[in-house]
Image 1 (cartoon, rainbow, N blue to C red):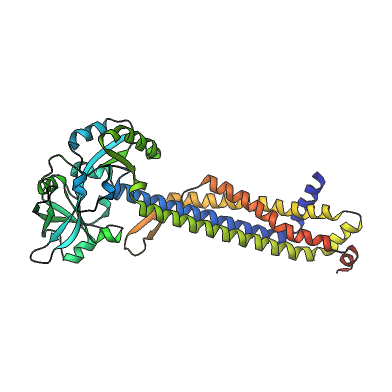
Image 2 (cartoon, rainbow, N blue to C red; image 1 turned 90 degrees about the horizontal axis):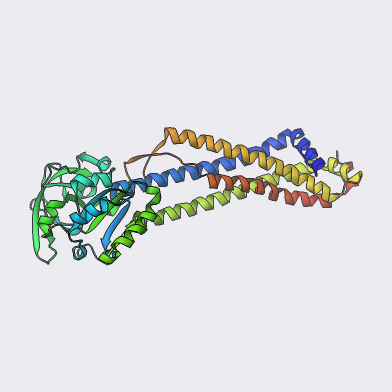
Length: 408
């Protein structure tokens, strides 16, 4: 076996042109796969932070049955005595910040214009930016709500276009209270926010939670409590602990993945696309190596005939060809993985800025190294080389030593 390995290594070194072509195919293939995976992982991480730090928070607490309610019946699932409950949550290990919200449906009118249906998110002005620190980064005009904006409102950019609102304009929100009575409040637009989701961008309005409680006759009540953890790598453990503590109160805790199911579905589809692309790349690599090995076989007919003529068995020649391909596969896969890792590390430092589809929003992607995926790509790269050598190696069995020796 050692002699076969040494002979194969010499052949790999001697046939420089064939070796370099095969190595290039493997290196380019693995680099494309790993860099593509790294960029996708970076994009998904950035998108995840955009969701958790810009809209949903990491964990949300609601009354059981809340997610089955329509936006016009959410008030029926309010959490009483929310201030004291939030103080209790802040003392829990793993909880960094807590903020209460009231979400409800209503009508918004500007002047005498026709009212439009909106989705209102009443925020705890002091703590909202602590649980969702990217909200302010999504403001494209004016500012987000401050503690002085007791009558302020922030509207989504799509809604702004729909009603023709500008910074400083007065708008009226009409909504049904928890008891079913209709009430209205006048607010002044202080900011315009860009929401990534098209539906939210056309309907969302932020207002102070105190003003919403006044509008809806909800004294110290909220419809949801948002939590930011001190370690987002242990969200599931924190979520499980919260559920054990609050279940007896008729409440439930959910991570952002349970809340933003649409986004999670998109990520699953993206991962499926990446898997298909990886599979296609591997098939291309296998086909390219196989083609190279077949051509090499015909170029080396005389060499193979000589080996068989001096008594070397066909199975030993097959082993030689497979060993050569394995050596090339290991070298090419190793270079491909290392080169792609270097490129990903460089890109992770400088970032890659692009525009999100169907928006004017720029996002900087920092690719991530996925060590298990890279290890898998290395193994598959080597296996691809071995598999690709089987077909031409089998053709060796059909080589007639006499005919091979006649080949010029």
